[in-house]
Image (cartoon, rainbow, N blue to C red; front, side, top):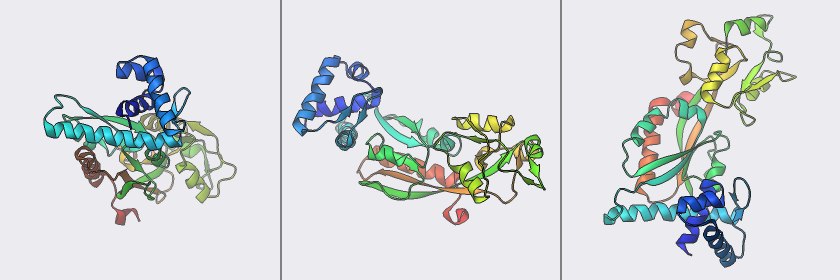
Length: 295
């Protein structure tokens, strides 16, 4: 299989369009198009869904994954032969926003010392990040899915604890008989994929569901809750002194949800991937609850 064709496929998916891929590869858009046509002709299958952005078909996802593995191993072979100069390998990894905003800081500090690797972080909800592995978009992912994606290894990292908090003023406005009126008090959600608040509400029989505000940023989510826009499930790691200084209060003293997080990565003998895995593992040991504590 022609490596130039695989590089064209990777560039199209990473950059989103044929034109942007051409710029990245230093060739004309027609040359990129010809390489993809040749690849599709050789396979007898379409590998790219044309659109904005372009995306891989099922066959394209298989090829994309192989292409990334080949590129990673090719870079490491050049390093072993001493012929890579100062080139750096881009390594795409999927992380969830809350992890990136909290316990992954030591991982980023480790990555800052690497001289042969750059990170391409894909921010995705932990319940949905494993699909990026299936698509071949990333080489590793932090996910809440314990079932290993085909061709990947999986390990438990620990658990992230979320607690229901609000401003004292918001809580007091919606107290009913000494308890929060869950069906009426506005709630903040990260995005449509964010299920934490709904899980908490379902456990308390809230019906109908309350008014919802959507704030798709981990830092913005915290700011919205602190502003009194609504209540939300916040990582305990993100609360800082908010509960101590009284700017936020727990809506239920014992209420919480523990989300188990896993690291899934390709089963590939790669120095760079092993380094990333160990850095994620080390950060998780510092920041996440252990399996026993999460139970």
